[in-house]
Amino acid sequence: MITDEDFERYERDLPAALSSAVEDFPAPSSDLVARSLARGRQRRRARTLRRSALAFVLVAASVGGWAATDGGFGLSSDSADRTRLPSAADVRRDLVPYLMKALPPEGVLTDAESRFEADAPKVLRTEAQVSGTYATAAGKSSLVVSISRPVPGSRTELGSYAYCTGVRPDNECVRVVQPEGGALTVRKSTKEPGSPDAEWSVVHTRADGAMVGVRLSGAYDDAGEPAGVPTMSIQQITEIARSPVWAPVIAVEPTAAEQVLGLVPALLPDAVRLEARDGDSRSGEFVVQAATGRHLLTVRVDPTPLGGWQGCPPGALAWTCGEVTLSDGNRALAALNRTVDERVVPLSLTVYRPHGLQIRFEVDAPSAKSTLVYGELATGTTGLDLEMLKAMAASARWDAR
Image (cartoon, rainbow, N blue to C red; front, side, top):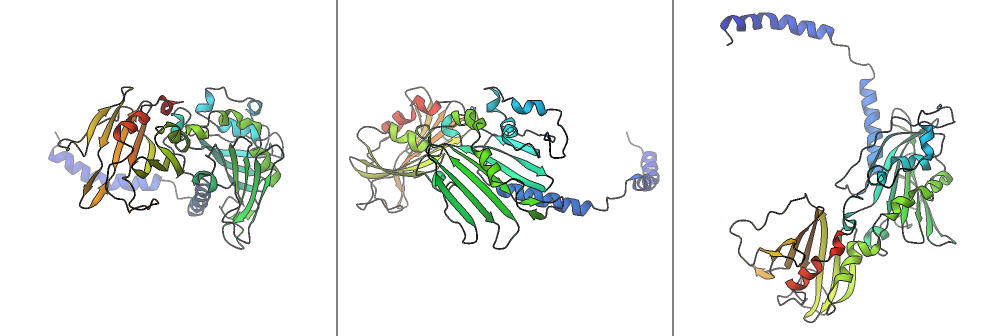
């Protein structure tokens, strides 16, 4: 027990202890603020390049400074490993060795990290990505390499750097179709007109539709200020994009038929005809023609924790939430088409499948007009009923890995 004497001794000794601690504490670094600001600028530049959607798996692979074999940076202790590709198992966890194999030898790569969802069902995978800071005697550049197989005509593909869209007049972009098939898109841009803050990119679209995109920021110095053009030439960036080292990664990226936009049309019942589709890597909107008219079918896939099934909330009405079992034994939550306060609530089915996959289907009632108009839907019996959705959701093709 603490006594009154203990408190008195504590009060007596505290000022001397604090004074001693202050005297022993090292003085602040004279350039602490400058170094902090510089580091902040470097991190913001890297985040600007890494603006792809975050995935649920991030593999941080620190590279303490693999050096080159020439260019004044000395011989790295692991330079012999630059010629060794990871095994098939490694590709699921770390893409940094692939990048090291593709880099020009005169620089140093630091702060490297990668993400690749190869352990997830293919329908959940987005682009694989590996990034880091590449430094030469000219300065440092933030480097990002993205590997994907976007569905042709999708938002993901049309909105990528593979096309010269949205290019300012003062920037440069050229897209050249390759003799062997595919295309090469080269872009030089600046943050704003006349700015020294540059970004160069090359996207190699292969004949099979796979894309390897490489983006490199303009060089910056230790203070984080722009110091000139990127630390690689366009030729070197192109060689990274066309490098064969990415082949094992591309091989396990989902094809168009294994992504939502390709998989859902293949699972539609014979009595339902697809008229149009739009979406990205994890969601799709499908205009379909059924016996009762034209409908909008929306399908979205998301990662969910294993064992994430919770069932309907207590007291839920039967038509607002019902627990159903698919033909393959997986469970789902269903909500029937209904009208609430003159607002149409569509038929929906939320499915929980193995390996952390959740799929949500929604089917709007027939449109009140001859063509589908979002937000102007009439009540009625949907041609895509609950049993059809359950049959689609029970396909083993969702679980392909």
